[in-house]
Amino acid sequence: MSLAQDDYLAASEEALLGMFTAGDEKALEALLRRRKKWLWNVAKKTIRDDSLAEEALQEALVLIWRNASSFRGESRLTSWLYQIVTRACIDVLRKEQLRSHASLEEFDRVDQIDSSSLFEQAIADGLFIHGAMLELELEHRQVLQAIELEGLSVKEASALLNIPVGTVKSRAARAREALKQVIIKLVDEKGNQENISNVSSLEVKRAQKK
Amino acid sequence: MPKKSEADRAIESLSKLEPLEDVPTQVSANFDDTLSRLMSETTSKKQKTSRLSGANQFALAASFLVVFALGAVVTLNTGTNSEISLVASNSTTENDPPTTDDQLLFSDGAGSPQSSSDTPVGIFRSGHDYTVIPADLYLTVGAGATWNSPQDLIALDKSCLSALQLDQITNVIDYAKLGSLSIRAVWSPVTLNAWYVYLIDENCSAIDKKFVEKP
Image (cartoon, rainbow over all chains, first blue to last red; front, side, top):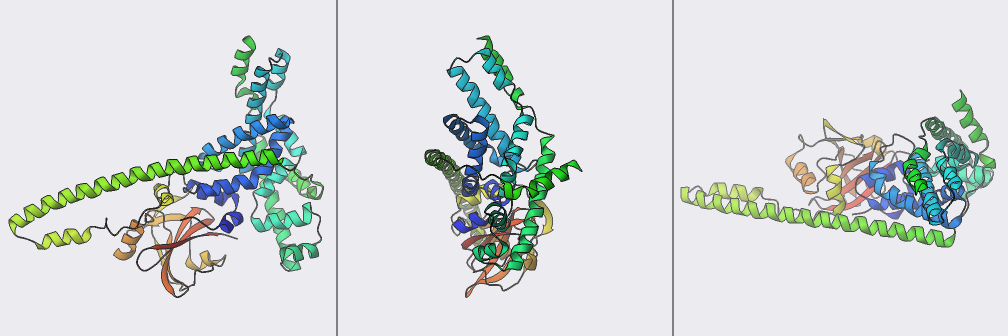
């Protein structure tokens, strides 16, 4: 017995993960479809090259699917997904260098990519704000999307969302506060980012020796 | 408060936020294909688990029959027939509804953020029509975030929840309506802020499964 499609669309990401843990894989599918654009942008901004970014996205997708049930919410979902995608990007870059017989300097360049610089770049690119917005409830996302990203007036947002002007204002205020709380946690997690370059530096060193 | 000011700056810059780049059509299609493949892999694994569980149920039923037959022989020999009918009436294997895949996985609660509690499963009689579930109904029925103990439930509720494999994951039962039908709405937490609501008719058949999240 599964839920109606609208239930998945309206559910928060936290609830979707809870449903997945409870055995409903459609919930994770809904979450990943919602995150598709964001995941692509993380991969694309990390690698730049379209085909390599896609390879990394595919690898990340499989990793997310296989590990989602072990996600316990110790970090924000945005941080967790971000780490998986960037690690997949670095792995893909290394594989590409092996394929193309890259010079030792080029290996070093990938080896020196560290999570904190990627993290800073992600903040500069607005990826974390977009990611944080996706963690919000549907009604908060909708109102911020309309007012902040699409630049609609409160009155226009009221007409678009079919809710009273007063509700738009109060909902927007609550949405900004909720977003701020998510961002504060994300910034806090920045300090806990491990150095991604250490993850498989041994592999690279072995490759360099060859 | 550097963290706060960083967050404040982010909020202030929302209107200047660059939109995300669209996913190229082919990348998007490949993403969807991979997702479908992962879905079907998971589904087929679940079906295997379900078949195994079905086999276990069959083995259990078979061993029950052997024990029952032996018991019957012994009882016939001693001439106390009343005990046979008592054992037979306790058998529920034939009347159990088919178990769905998600209930099988759901019942073990593996990896769930929820926890079991010794608090008895709550009983509420809202009489509410669950055709539509208002966002604040969880407050009315007093739905919480733990899987409560079914020990104190009346036998009818206990056996029904057990048959549907909901006995270990129920927080509260609400006696209610679905249109003109009398139903029991079983609230089962999936996170601290969200529930599945199983709608069960008087014959202990699950009619529908809904989802409720705190607004």
